[in-house]
Length: 213
Image (tube, one colour):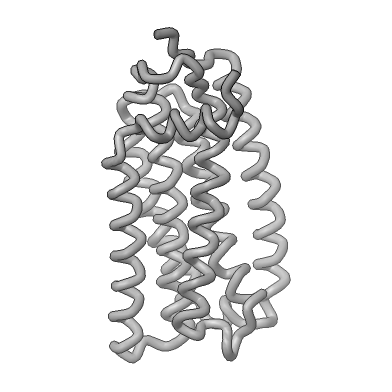
């Protein structure tokens, strides 16, 4: 009997690696873009706003991978008779979440965005849009619109990016006096995020894709 760890490793090993490559390239391009912006003289609030937009795009991209891999070609996997869609999705959500958060805080550290604002404050500014975008993407994933999800992910990424840009441009929106609003938004978003994940996994449990080779 294979352990859960080995089962997951086998399932991830036989996936189409293209989407992982695109995901990695997107992360690298984001870091390069932020590095370039630093040399343009963009102020700290502007840099934080860009990071907010980047966090949202990163979140939607990582969740759209689920639609492309686990709900598509992944179902055709024949190399492992232990294939379980729910296991893979749960593992990917945890793995991509940890990677994304580490990358976001690495960017904060690399570009000294927390020096005059504080790590907690910057964390709320970046993680709140990340959670809001995750909630939106998970909502799209839960919809029965197979084949139309790619355009919905793209539209949501554009609309949310514009929204974050507008919020970042509002005077005093990133001041310490509004920090309590960000804290409330973060807590509410975190709760809704957990609810969305449970909703998605519950739907999958009712119709899991099993591979019988």
